[in-house]
Structure formats: structure tokens, C-alpha cells
Amino acid sequence: MFNVMEKLEFNFEPFNLALSEGNIDKASEMIHDFFQTLIKNRYGKDYAKLNILKLIYVLIRHTSSDKSNEYLNKMIVIFQTDNLDCIKTELMNITNDIGRVYRKNAKQYSRVINQVIDEIDRHLSNPELTLKWLAKEILFMNKDYLGKQFKKETGQTFTEYLMHYRMIRAKELITQSNQLQICDVAEKIGFINNPAYFSRAFKKFTGLSPLTYQKKIRKLNRHKSE
Image 1: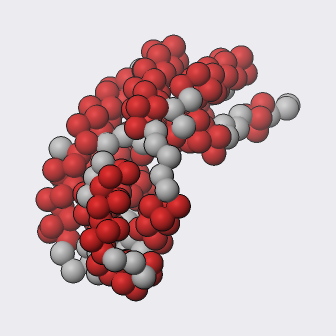
Image 2: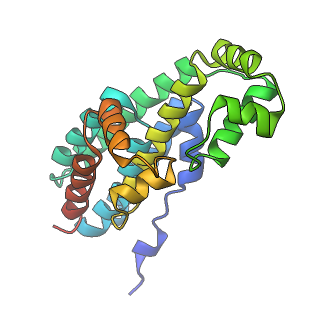
């Protein structure tokens, strides 16, 4: 018997790109096509939920601050139902919310600020990563000028941006792996010497402690096998 399950493939790369660009129509179209494929081929409940769960994880990684906990709780509830239309509607709503935020915040940065952002990503695990260190050791620029330019273009100080980026990355790491301990996550994003500070910062950012957030993710994982 031909196994139609092998045909189900959701390409997350263009979906992530569409979201990041604020292209709501494209992202929504991809979700619609994904669910049409689920319904048309009558995939088993467990297999369908496994693939939907992957999509939920992608969406959660794009959220931040107050919305993160709200969406996570909402999906834990909605994921317990077998009604694909309900799940699809909720995912579409979240996609629209995220896309509107990206569209509102979309900016074109100068070459030097793009370079700063690239270096933040490259050296994220370095606990010594600061504007002063980056300006002196990597970019060979005046720290004060770089800081003012960064704030002017991004609307955030370097420290604010770095903390926000680290919290987003922490959420990704917790979501992607059930094996990582919270101290491992802290180390990977530059809090190797102060996991307690990481926990406080994460809770301020998401409304949940890292451990509570991890438990919610694991609870969501368990639903896929029920």
C-alpha cells in the first residue's frame, strides 16, 4: 500500500522568511496549504499532530515578551482537540499577529549596524560581549559613536538589543531540545557565570521562569502522543 505520509513536507525556511518579512499573505497561504494536505490525505491523528507541533514551535520562536506565554497557553489548550479547523484558525491568528509585528518593525539598517547584529549572533555565548568589547576588538570603532548610531537605527541600546536577542535564543534552545538543562541554555547564550541572573531575565521577558517554560513545552510535546 502506498504510504501517503511520506508526501507531507512543510518547508519551514520560506515560512520563517515570510514571517520575518511581515509577508502575512504568504505565510498564511503556506499554513492553509499545509492543512489542506493533512485533510486531503487523511493522515492519522498522531502523525498530523506531530507535524502541526513542529509548526507551533516555529511560531512560538517568533514571539516575545507578553505574547509568548499567551500563545503557549493557548496552543496547549487548542492542541488537545482533534478538530483541525480549530487548530488551523488559531495558528492563522497567531501568524497574522506575528506578521503584523514584523511588518511594523521592519527597518533597513546601515552596513555597520548590520555588522554589529551579525557579530552579536556570532559571539552570543561570550559572557564578555559588550559594546565596548565589540567596538575595540572586532569593529575598531569609537564606542560612543557606535552606541549612538545603534540606538538611532534600532530604537534600542546595544544592551537592550543584546538581552532581547539572548532571550529569543533561549526560547529557541528550550523549544528545540528536551535534553538541555537550564544551566546549559544559560551557558550557550552568555550567562555561563550567572544562571540565576539568566532565570530572572527570562522570567521578566516571558512572564515564566525557564523551568516553567520548559515544562509547558514538554507538556505540549506529550499531547502529540496522546
